[in-house]
Length: 204
Image (cartoon, rainbow, N blue to C red):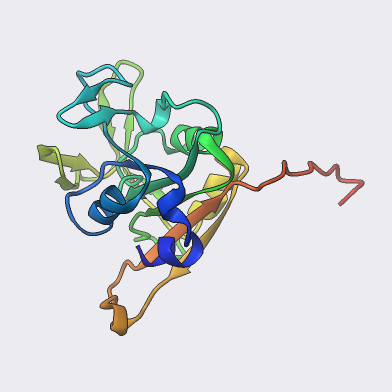
């Protein structure tokens, strides 16, 4: 929430989508104070765009939102559980309004090492584990969420190659805020106000 307050002080007036929120902390503050806040979860047996148990069902890899309809996408520890993160980053870019952003956390466990893809999904839907399976807590399922990617700092380049958008990694180490831990990075992917000019080699 520190980064949202700092970099988007007008957040209460923005259209905010949060995927897979939890019922505390930043999620609760956004829900209470934002003028236009939509919380979504992914339910495998519910059609996307429909509401279930108080949430709209959305798949980050195939969002049903209109183009340029969201000011802020917020995800907290979600992108280490996606099978097609490149598709999700493209969808976020598509649905962001110019000047909007994706503010998110995901454990950067690899640091300066290349990101490691731990599990993939076969065309028939079968899960292929490339490393011993690891699960994190899931707010809507007692089965947990499989870790599919262990990201490193190269995630910023991955996002650019997937979506064409630039990402800033913010390090917050501040005991006054009660923040000191191993995974304290917050990532902010910005959609520019104006279309980026594609340069040819002769222009660069």
